[in-house]
Amino acid sequence: MKSITFFMHNIYAMGGTVKSISQIANVLAEKGHHVEIISVFKGDTSPYFDINPSIKVKPLVNYQLHPFNFKDILFNRITKWTSLSKPKYISQHEPGLNQFSHYIEKKMIKAIKHVNTDVLIGTRASFNILIAQHAPMKCEKIGMEHMNFDAHPEAYQQEIINAYKNLDKLTTLTETDKVKYQDYIHIPTFVIPNIINETRLQEQKVKNISAAGRLEYEKGFDLLIDSINLIQENMRQFGYQVHIYGDGKERDNLSKLIRKNNLEDIVFLQGATHQLNEKLAKSELTVIPSRNEGFGMVILEAMNQGSVVVSFDGNAGPESIIQNNVNGYLIEHGNVDALANKLRRLINQEFKDQVIIENGYQTVETYGPNAIYLSFRHMLDT
Image 1 (cartoon, rainbow, N blue to C red):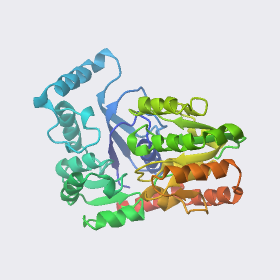
Image 2 (image 1 turned 135 degrees about the vertical axis):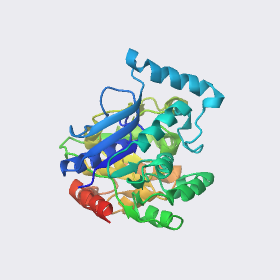
Image 3 (image 1 turned 135 degrees about the horizontal axis):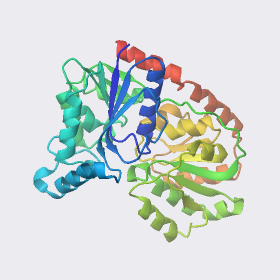
Image 4 (image 1 turned 90 degrees about the horizontal axis):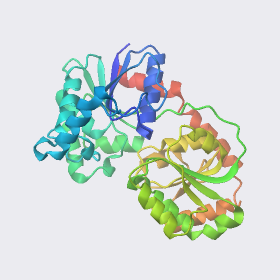
């Protein structure tokens, strides 16, 4: 069996990509593969999601407040404040570029050059580019894409096209993404969706609308709040609340939007949670208001817990999972009025949701660990 290293941003933080990599790494380890994870950053004592004990996790920069980590913290701060020591090799289009410094990228390149497993897998575009440039010749270089191609800025798209030609293989989350990438990058490309491997809980439903994810602009939580503003009297009349789970740089802006529209008694920012499945199991509805969504793990998690899903269309992820009026509902992309109207009708109990819920359960079955492992194993062996 091939040995595998995943190269990722931060295994110690909450996020859809973090969860998906944790799950596929666990399945590979359970099937007998030797698995390692290189995490550029470490800010906690243990990974956010459970990791198989056999998996070796190697952090490169430890931000935990401890005397042993003083060098990492100090050097990165100094190099961030010094223009001559800003990143030179990480793509300037990397969305989180401000987190990196020349000190960090040198650690990253050194780690890539010293990988000794059969396969090295990058998990975001800027990492895939570094792997394409610096991975050992003996190592099979695989890029994982968790974003659809069009979600990248045009200048980044060209950089991706040029660099990915030096990868051995590429994986995408959806067939739509696969076709798009193959239009530009002529290397073997495979669809490897995320795994859903959660226990189905039996919880009494309450009148909650849930949403979850990083509090970033692309996730569109402001659009959800705007839609709730349009139906706030209906929400109060029928006793519904909106609970948004997650943390991120948009938190303050979202709080201001809630206050501006006098929604403090309806919309609540709950922070990140390790009990998301319990929250979804109690929620009648789950909304995915993303402007861009590569896959939408929360969609599957909500379906698995019998929470009816509403999402915008025009995103490869939701459109690959949700069949409108069959296992969930798709709304015109970015249309706040349409989202408000759909939610109003749902909380008014105008639809019979049990069929939608049962169809959601069937959808979830196709994303189970064994099914995704077979796809992953086929990709490795091809």
